Image 1 (cartoon, rainbow, N blue to C red):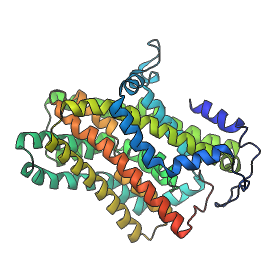
Image 2 (image 1 turned 135 degrees about the vertical axis):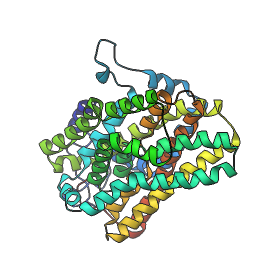
Image 3 (image 1 turned 90 degrees about the vertical axis):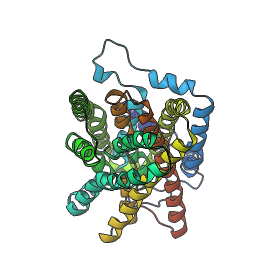
Image 4 (image 1 turned 120 degrees about the vertical axis):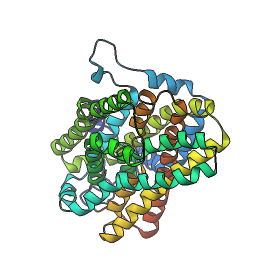
Amino acid sequence: MALGAVRLLHWSPLLRNGRRHGTHDGEAPEPMAQQPITRLSEFVRRFLPLLLALCYLLALLVPTPGQRLHAWSLPDGLPEVLRPRLSHLLVALLLFLAALGADMRRLAGVVSRPGLLLLGLAAVWLVPAAVVLVAWWALPLLVEPQAASALLVGFALVAAMPVANSSAAWTQQSRGELPWTLALVVLSIVACPWMIPLVLQLLGLSFLPAQAAELAKLTTSFTGVEFVVWVLLPTAIGMLVRWFVGPERVATHRQSVLLWSATSLLLLNYINAAMAFPQMRDDFHVTWLAASAVVAFFLCVAGLLTSRALGRWFCESRERVTSLDYSLSMKNTGLALALASDVLHQQPVLLLPVFTATLVQHLFASALHRATLRRNSRYGLAVASDEA
């Protein structure tokens, strides 16, 4: 899929010979009469929050196609790691497109700011854990204690997760500094085997020996071959393609890259919502759902406030802060869902906060994206690079 996307970008007749008026250094100017792909890409990027809401509405009304897409996989003859679900392929495509569009000269900026990188990485776990600890005290005041305990265990799983892979797509759409998001995604996943048990222990969760063994197995597999094949490899291929074809050629196809990224993001959200809504309906209680939505919202807000505080403290650029915004407000709920299903399957209500966090963080990201576009338009800001 990634190679097909590269081939399409490389041979696109709409953009191959086009020039563009420049708003970014190192990019060729566009013609005054915008190409159709450019107009479509700008439309999707501008109305991405509305399109996301429509995807959720479609998943609520017509979930069956999304469930079938989720169940799709390659034939049985292949090894399990090479038989991903469509959602895994979409995440790999998002990472490939993010790496393809990233100005890798800015990786030096990541390495040269170890203080910000380490604090950002620590905030990935410490800030959500603090929110869950507060919720542990407040939530039993709103819902019955037994339900509150089950919901909070679900949110503890969410808090222990690494940065969401899809945060790279939102960073790309908002023209943030992609190398920072990619670095936090990769490093947070690498740290999973140590950080997930530590955070869960900090939040007071204990497991039976069999559950602890299953937890260790899942986190190890998530950071093993699967991590290499579906996270590191797409990212590395994107970097290599960018180096091979050159930043100028990638900049020429910037709108195609953004359109592919937005389309993949919307399809991924439709599939996730189509799987989530039936489960949420089965476990539906107004107070449970409302409480879960509030906690999920405050997890996002806490990450955003932390990002802004770090940006102000280190006097960082708006583009770098934008990448931190998405990295610290979005969690890899796919792994949380696997842990809740395989390790704590005797408590199905745990899936409700995980599903709710998935939907809320993308709605929050879409609102943040719209605010970023308005801010950039108001102040005439542009990214001073050739990042797509």
